[in-house]
Amino acid sequence: MQGEALMVTFTSSLDLTPSQVEQVLRLAALAPSLHNAQPWRFRVLPHLIELHADPTRRLAAADPQDRELRLACGAALFNLRLALEHAGVRPVVTLLPRLSAATTVAEVRSGGRVQPDAETTALHEAIPRRHSHRDPFRDVPVSAEHRQFLRTAAHRERAWLHIVEPAERGVLEGLIHRAHRAQMADPRFRAELAAWTGRPDDAAEGVPARAAGPAPEAQDQWVHRDFSAGQASRSPGTRFEAHPLLVVLCTQHDDRSSHVEAGQAVERVWLTATSRGLVASMLSEVVEVPETREELRALLGQDRHPQALLRIGHGTPSVPAPRRDIGDLLLDTDDAS
Ligand SMILES: Cc1cc2nc3c(=O)[nH]c(=O)nc-3n(C[C@H](O)[C@H](O)[C@H](O)COP(=O)(O)O)c2cc1C
Image (cartoon, rainbow, N blue to C red; front, side):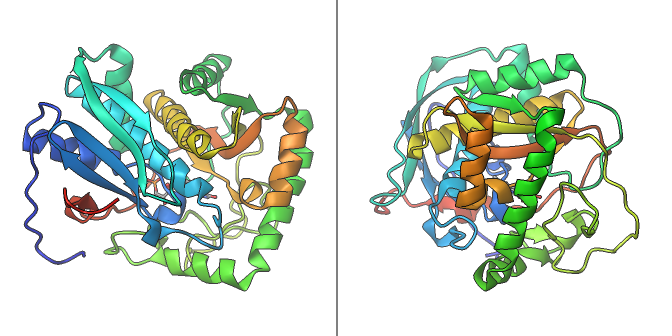
């Protein structure tokens, strides 16, 4: 709990010192998660670090199947891999996403020593600089070179990045509007959103009002969800960029492992964007509502499963969202999984 003095003792693992272990877990926990619920925990053993989903942080209205919960855990896993590599440990990952029976998402062991390459170093440096950027972007297009880097990043994690073509924007816009209306018509969704957003500055979880971006307006094409719980200063006529880069991250399958892989891919794409001076936010309503997700899948064709929609562009640095105390994320070595 925040505010309580926690006496957490970190232990050595994978040949890392206790303070190195603390640092790699701290970086893992900087991953993005729906409503900043931070649905992950870690168990540290001498030869192994386990990543667990935290079922008490499920978002039952927005994410009833836990797809986005697994995606968030995948993003934390990607940060953990990067942090280990940066500390000189080659991570060997086994995915175990059997959420219904056990909470273990992945086990990470050491595959020996490794010298981090330039890309690992750049992505690692980007971890604390990556934030959700909900403000309008500058009207500067994302270059073809940058788009290619983003596509490659997704491929490296066995995912596929569909860059939304101008001809597809109208249909996508319609789907997002429909999904948003469907969610906002559901009192359970509204209550859940209100509980996790517009949080005070000293909250350790949820989306703080200061990171909410401007209050959405009726004419906004892409940004609808109000993360400020009605508190954002309404600046009439706030203009969002006319042509953001919209990308849909897709996977070949749609099982539990695919969701964890999608999370790793989202984080590699987002950190690649950050390392190259771009900013991003997620627009998830269209992939959360089953009907619009299915229509988006049909629009993309080729039997790919859409897992996340991101808006990427050029903008000024945004505000970091808070994180829970790292001590609250540790499972005892004898806790049942
Ligand atoms: C699966 C998933 C879905 C998300 N959906 C949205 C979204 O629809 N709109 C949004 O603004 N942010 C969305 N986010 C971003 C989170 O709100 C954000 O990661 C969290 O508040 C922590 O802030 P940070 O990204 O700045 O670290 C999503 C994140 C994840 C992992």
